Length: 287
Image: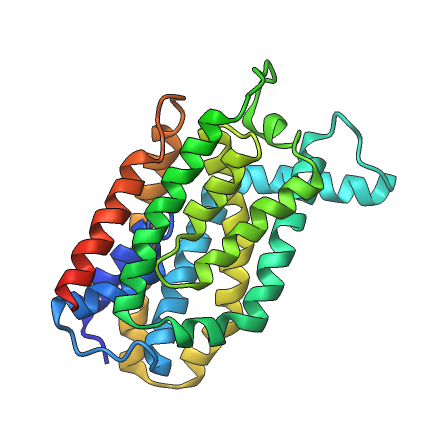
């Protein structure tokens, strides 16, 4: 059982590391071991705790972008009604890109999540993959710079994202499968995929946040009722305290990151360096 302090700390950590490209699951596995907390990461309660904090993060993303989601959902309905996607209907095109990007990660996540995380759940392996996550972020930046980029005069982030093809949307969404391995970041993988498919940092981050909402929210909503069905009041209150902390820090994180990447000269380099050195330090400590 987690204490309230541990629950709040891990909740705050999840709210930050889920949206920063530094792997929330990896940090949730590594830091309890580094702090010497006697926590069984494979226990049903700990998994339900993680589900609660993920649900809180998804809810924050939904509320933060609620106006955008209204436009996107309306665009999808228009495409159903008209039985076509108008070239000028950026909301409909973005909606179908999100559908295309969500399906592969959602299906493979449901099929293989438990097997993958059971195999890689140790803190040592999470630290190793956190280091590899740093290489992924750095590699995406290097490949993006080498790739010839065409200047775009399209105004509006959603309009620029909507220029992606459905196949490109699938490729970006599929990158999120890496996040099933503790240490790899879902946000980082999606941003890297966006950059490699021609998006700017600002647009890749926005697309990543929009992709995160249905994936995190649906996965958490499916499992969250089990926490309340258990009837364990202590477990429920600790999970709620962690979820509140996750929600607060997720809101601060999305505010910071959307502003940080609104300037074109901002890159993933600081996050890549953090993941690389944090992974090395954690491997040394946990050796």
